[in-house]
Image 1 (cartoon, helix red, strand yellow):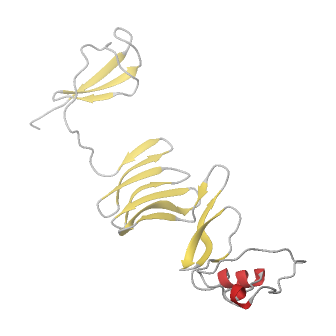
Image 2 (cartoon, rainbow, N blue to C red):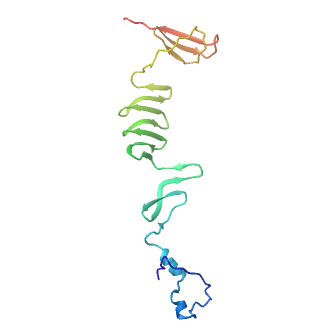
Length: 196
């Protein structure tokens, strides 16, 4: 098949039309006949062309300069689906993703910071040291719990409060045992001893 020069001009004729040159030699000197097959040969596979194929619902990607294939990402009617992690472009050990069934992880510097699975949620510090987690009966703190500042004491034992609310002051620790507005709640307290 011939390759059509980029500067060539042409028009099309139906198959039944005779394309034999019948004019003068000077009029036909710059005429060349091409077919649709020549067009396919010119723009078909080769430099600058695109090859490859994809799968329904898969997001395409380039796997070479001129070839498209499926990426690892797919889509559904409501979701974007990835097999494991989304990774920071310039920091391969900082990522968020899914390490297994019902498990979500956030990592920085190659260490877990948050892990949520089908049973609990755990928070980690520094080099992946677990500091906090949820469990069936409540929460577990690993290590000491530090207050950034002391709390304000309830004005009275029936001041507004929420069941389970705890307040720490320099002299007492208070716990609310009945939820209510002022006059309807209930607080208990225990004295803190110093100088033992």
